[in-house]
Image (cartoon, rainbow, N blue to C red; front, side, top):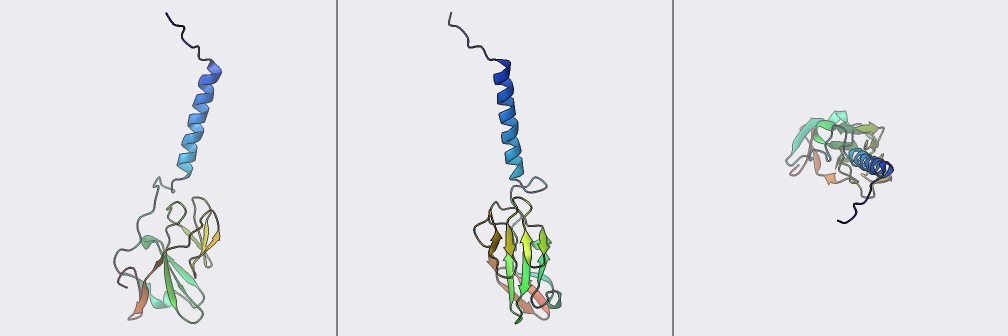
Length: 142
């Protein structure tokens, strides 16, 4: 009869520790609330609110639609998806004109969509946006 390998207590504990740490790493890559990725941005035009809500040189975060709208000093509106391009997490914070992702700390300029802090390397996805009858409308077909 062949000899069975003997597994030490240390080997069992080491394996359990590695498995636990790997599980924590996977959990850390998920968005708050357990979702691995954010809900999609608008797939049709969405009325976001009054045009007056976005001041020149400022930005407004429409969390329920995963959209940020900014207005340049000259009055030009821009809209971007607030789904992080690094791991697909929904961005949940706007500080001035900087969007902050809660998953890994990526930051984006809400006026240009550009990355201002890694780990993200790709800018936010720009969305069509327009003002219509004093309202901001964003999304495909806007």
